[in-house]
View 1 (cartoon, rainbow over the protein chains, first blue to last red):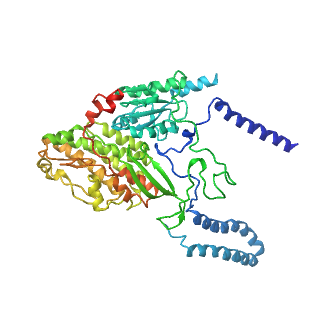
View 2 (cartoon, rainbow over the protein chains, first blue to last red):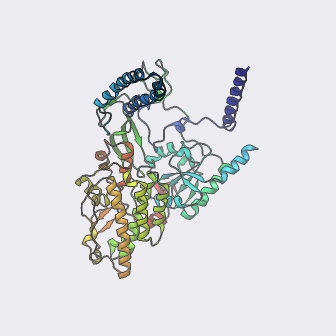
Length: 115
Length: 436
């Protein structure tokens, strides 16, 4: 019953959203092809924009994850540590050692150099 | 009806105008930038009125048609001192700069209330090339390679990145002549790899810029130095307005423009502007050393660019009148983008200081065989187009660095007519006269 109510709420919300978008647009013609072209101040693109692009901050994001994962597990670990003692320290040590391999690798590849 | 009150509200809103900067169209756009109720937008997609300010050469009419067709309906065009395209023969034309803001507001009101129909589309509503539908993804080719989706070949040229050698696709586009971030009239073919400029080929030079008549009079005989220097300060302040607007510092840009329109701008106002620029981080926007001109390039560009690169070249040094005022050319050492903006501000302050001094002592220029224009020395020859330096300067820069470098350089040739002549002379109205 609750699921059914939820389903109706989602249906009504989506319907209203679409209606609000459709009402002002119903008499508008589709934009023409020249209107849809990228604006280059009167110039034209010579190649398609569908190309491979290097995300240059990618190594930085991986490094962030390596650091962040450590912190993410350290909070629940702090609770468990009180109960488990030395065993928890060993486990965390192993976990950190594995992650630091990633950081050391990143270091070797020059991730920490600001370009 | 809901739509009617929405239209009434829209009619009272600020008028979004996309300006096409034609020949000698800049002065009126500076006035419009300060006009109340009008917003000059940077993309035709945000505009309801296309304002063609100044003449557009016939070979750029196709580019103008493309820009015209990129405005969303309903939209209208207004032609300021420019002949409408043949297809838009009935479009409104205004030649009086004072009547322009009101004309724009009236057109916008009529457009929003439905009294005026939208401007017709000039280009056929067809894809540049019909959809091929080939390949698994319908991208016009086989597999992931090749094909011409929507008429444009895939970027498959695979050139080495000049930044770090990473081989990736590059994207080639033709920019201009009406791109707001480029000087009006400049057209260039640019190859980009990501945000890095791989190559830059200038196809057409920027339109000539007109200077105030004081500089022309200085070539005929003595003129009051105060008049000449104030005109110089006004010119640089307007350029600063462009640079600040590009940097997204809209309020500071308007402040610079307001100073340019004051009859006697105070030196302390410019110093206050400089302090605000430092605080806003304007000089730190460009990485130090980017856009550096070598000696030859600096000499080719001349004026501020030359002095920012350490060349102590100024026609004023040889003038008795200026020597009486203890004039010494200011220079910077680095010759990069930040140095050019520092030099621009220093020269604005210097010009206002010289103007104040010269007015007190009623000093006139003595030399009339040449004049130091804000664009560079004008002796035997007028400063010419220097956009050729971009081909050497811009490759290797990231897009934002390239654009701020471009804004800091004054590359357009000088017009043989003065600003007053270009804005007051009758404009040929018929097609025959225009062609003549």
